[in-house]
Image (tube, rainbow, N blue to C red; front, top):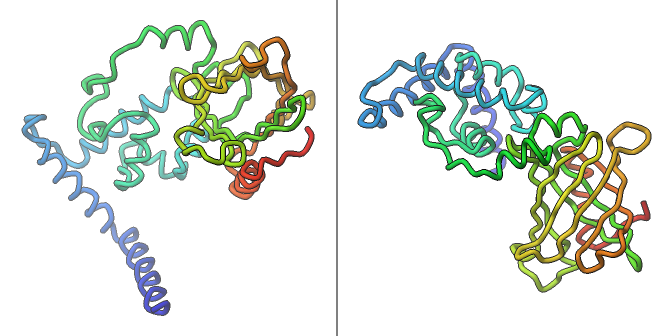
Length: 281
């Protein structure tokens, strides 16, 4: 059984390499796009060539990518090779369905970016909170980039009066704000469902200082963090204080250690968080 699977894998790699060298992949991709265009013909009233659709996708992707200061950082967040991403931007290629799904989810758009200009695609209704987030609270992607608060995973260690609380949080920059998400450890809430343990919030900045508001559902266990980069200036570690509504009169020290997308460090921190263990910051 295993030998057969290895053979299938080797054959798959060989066929993939062959298709890339002979242009077969381009032919298959163009065929897929042409079929997609025909399927949408009643809505678009025309059938465009694969080259036109690749150009449409490239133009839309360039418009979406302009929201981010660094294309390299954007590629890392998407998990897409920079060279391949440049091919998408230039209209030379379109992504595989799974990569297209990843791009659409990241930018909060749908697959119509292959067929229509972004301006013609219905977007979510504008909410006045958007301007407050970007213009007043300093939570837009450009502003957060200037603060060196990088996207990725952070391990948060709160030095509470009687114990240390450790949480793993993820920061994801959006056009309007930086979204914070994580989960309270199972050790801290052993009977709770993942939905009940979920943490969400936003991060904003004032100069180099970042403030985060996080909470579980229905405002449970809300926290306000005020943190600044470590004096070394590496931004690998952030220090500050955290306030909880249950003890608003007293702030507690907190340390955020940046893990980025290092899977080994992330899994190690997740195990410590599950066991509710933390070293003193």
